[in-house]
Amino acid sequence: MVHQSGRHELGQNFLVDRTVIARIGELVAGTTGPIVEVGAGDGALTLPLSRYGRPVTAVEVDSGRARRLARRVPANVTVVNADILRFRLPRHPHVVVGNLPFHLTTSIMRRLLAAPGWRTAVLLVQWEVARRRAGVGGASMLTAAWWPWYAFEVHARVPARSFRPAPSVDGGLLTMTRRAVPLVAERGPYQDLVRRVFTGRGRGLTEILERTGHLDRQAVRAWARDARVTPHALPKDLTAGQWASLWQEVTRRRRPGL
Image (cartoon, rainbow, N blue to C red; front, side, top):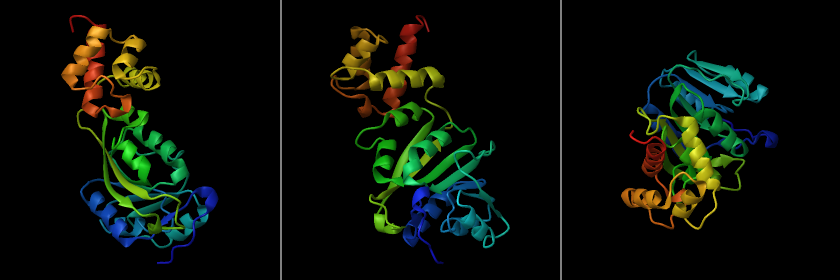
């Protein structure tokens, strides 16, 4: 297969490493249901994914590449020339797979996280984004905001030489899996809490929480002790379970007797 150079304005860095392609295939093989591929390009992932016999919708923004790919795929693959940020994702259960354009990673992830249908996403993103999303070395505000509904896991570091053209940074193979039972019921209020805590001022989490007014000093210290959170921990240091327990404590204090 000939892999042409990507268009700079589309942020295209095509995957050419067969080992990485095979690893993505292994992760997808552990899932069920139709597949939606983000950024199909020349079909480096599309064609291997088609061999599972499952319905594949390959979304590609470059009209020329979409036309060429449509002539090469088997009957179980539908190629759609569209921008993934405007493409209407299915509402029925499906799997998302993609080598995301690095400059659009956050925008695409936000779109996916708010979409209701998919169950697992297997994504190739920048290495540091993969680490932060999975909470390795500290979670981002975006991760903390969605952790009660999704589990994030880093599977591999992908060298820049695995792409053509090679980007300036390595990639990371990340999965996002929708939790069968969310850790938190109220999404809007919980995500507002996360935003307030991440943007709040203070030398540590206990001081930040006191200043936000969600909990008084005694309640903050009791929660931190029970949740095994050190006084000078920062918002990025909390786990998914600790965020959920913080939300439970805040809602309990807000609604006495519950």
